[in-house]
Length: 417
Image (cartoon, rainbow, N blue to C red; front, side, top):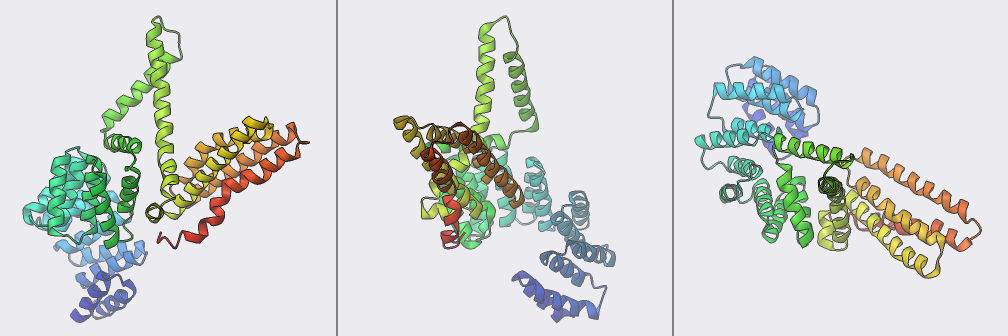
């Protein structure tokens, strides 16, 4: 049985869950109630995408050895991965009650607090783990992440340095240091850490997102926007509610006649400024992606749907650049109409390709195409006899709009995305 368990751990740690499952099945055949074998079984089933069986195996492990900390930790880990935050919190607390020296339990508790937006609790959990193992790189990295979100960037940088010193081959440590440097405004150094994180772990999506932000941050206008967005992302709930209340108050004053004209004008400026800032926050990333897609480094960092959106945005820009001067110089109504339609479509196009989730993007894409087709009807009804105008509208504009879709298959895979 011991040999089978060692084989199971060996295969599991090397990302071969199928072979690990065979080995753990042999161990459980020898002793169906062996808690260590049930712990491995829970982790292997989770890796194989069978969460229900993973939870069942973890509960069996706890029932087989309720006085041991490891089964409770396995249950906490499995429940956290399957979305049961309440059950995971109970299990991790039980783990620490049985054995407060389990550093990985402190680490899991900290990451659960981090996911819940409880930065101070995450930092406390990291420090509790470091009290038992001061050289633990994962706890140093967790502490750096919590400190960054708390706005204590100098301390976060020091913790990130310590994490890297203890684990120079850790993708998570490089990713954390990159985000700290990015928030401090050191885009060049952040780029190096994100690229190293992706070299160590090509599937590190958080590092890929950081790399994209760092590449965009090379441009001064976006760099200032990024620093503001990172700070706003970690505002407390009270601060966010205060901003919402201020916006509602300004909107009320701007929509009513008030005795003091300057107060009303100021509120109008605040309302339109807030709306413009929100629109810019939605447009900034897709517009910058349209610039990044022109460079090999940017294409490598962009995900396939982001590359597609960037090419469509470039197509829109090209269509507008062709049609607007044509309408101005020739007075062609169709060209002017379609140029205006292209400008109007820019915002929904940016929002469509910036959404997370394939299903949502596909639905918005269908709506976008439907809006474009509807935009052609007034043109046809107004000047159906102008063949050149319809030629521009029906042929040139869709080609400019969707040239990225036709060419997307050629280099998305070649760039390693």
